[in-house]
Structures are given as structure tokens and as C-alpha cells.
Amino acid sequence: MTKGGSGRPRRGRRPGESKTRSAILVAARRLFADQGYDGASIRDIAAQAGVDPALVHHFYGNKEALFTAAMHLPNLPEQLGAALASDPAARAEGRLGELLVRTVVALWEDKALQRTAIGLLRSALTHERAAAMLRDFVRSAILARVADAVEAPDRDLRIALVASQVVGLLMTRYVLHVEPLASATGEEIAHAVGPTLQRYLSGQISM
Image 1 (spheres, rainbow, N blue to C red):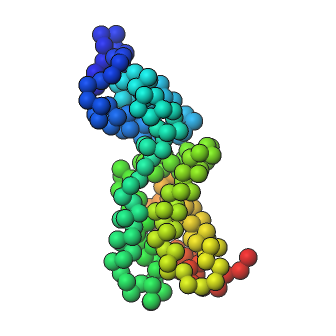
Image 2: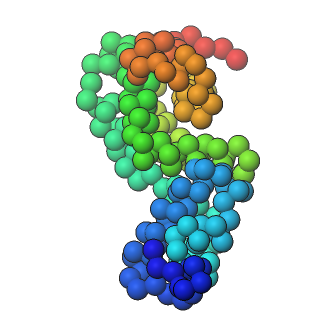
Image 3: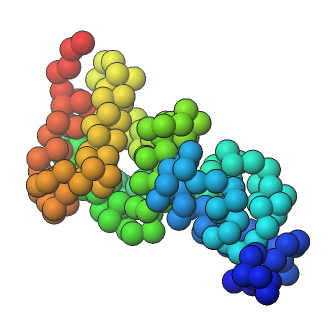
């Protein structure tokens, strides 16, 4: 981290644009995760990255654009799709709900992913833009991967119910740390919650 003699971040462009952008994103992810969207300021993120705030605006424009870039989770949909495809018999045998829970929990055990996504969850509680981003994330990373498995009527309702269960599970386990759910193993959670998701996917539901 390069600073001037006063201990303040050096003004102006840092050598190596890619390294500067990367440093800003790392700092943004950390502060968004720790403080939420509203609590993390451009000035604080710049200080964490060791750059002038003007550089943050130069590369990302404003805080919303920076948040969008910092919270991007590019590999999660592919990871989830690959995991679900690894057990093709699950759909036919009525185990897709259990497989989905097991897969989501396993992916969230990755500490880097967990820190970033928890920041998104926290920010969604207080900021509409973050909530919209979370909806997009859930649709692309989770719902799009299970939509084809829903053959029963009321497909949109079933998918929305799956989303409510999955997001609620993640919030309760990883953000609120409610016990004994927070300490349960992935297998224990899959056995407990999987049948509920399976009913949403293919069972009897009514509103």
C-alpha cells in the first residue's frame, strides 16, 4: 500500500491500473461486508485501498456501480449447475430438494464467497438497490438452475417458494447465526430442509 509522508493515501493515479482496480474491489468487498451498503463510504473504501477517492470515482463512477462490481459472483451459477447435474437421478427419485440444499450450503462454506454474499444479504435489508441485486443473484444463481425441474402447475409460485426457503436458510445460518442451525452439518440441513423444497418443486401447494 503506497502512502505519502503524512500517512495519507497518495493522490493521483497509482501505477498499474489493474492493480489499483483490484485493490479498490478488495477493499469494497471487505467494507460492504462489514458495514453494509450505507455504512461503507467511498472515502473509507479509498483509504482501505490506499488510493485517493477520486480514483474510485474514476474507475467506478459512484458507489452503486462500485457495489455492483464488488458483489459480482461470476462463478456461482456455473458451480451450482454443475453440482446439480452431478446427480441426474435426483430429479426422478424426488431428491432434488435435498440435493439443492446440500449444494447451496456447500458452496456457501467457501469463506471468500461467504464474506461477499453476506455483505450483499446485509445490504439488501437497508438499500433497495442492493435488494434488487440480491433478487437478480437469486434468480440467476439459484432459480434458473432449478426451473427446468418444475413440471407441476404454478411454476412461478413454486420457484418463489424455493427462493424464500433458500434465502431464509442462508440468512438464518450465516448472518443471524441461529443455533442449532448455525452449527449443523450440511447433511443435517439437507435432510431437514430438503423435503420442504421438494414439496415446493413437485408436491401439493395452495395459497
